[in-house]
Image (tube, rainbow, N blue to C red; front, side, top):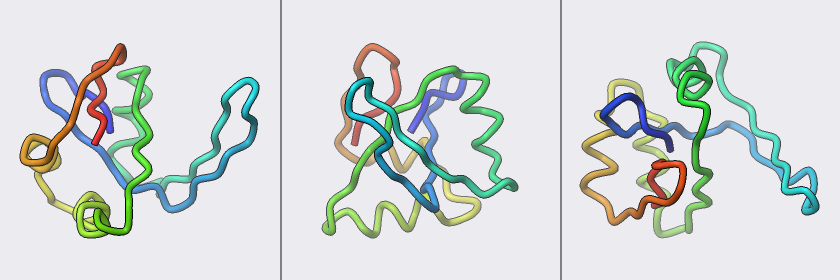
Length: 88
């Protein structure tokens, strides 16, 4: 998830793995056609949300084209930390 100007947005990564615990490093893969790639680069920050089995539907909605992700985030319980990226 990330803050895109005055709205929140997010996406579902097709692959995610831990690279290092010290320092914390992750690797994730995104579809090259994803609109989120450029927006994440521009925002310079994002949050990684590791969702539970009970949140599978939420993950699927983030992966669905034309989903209003800002509304999706606002409808779910979230918090904001230093980066202003929503934590679900």
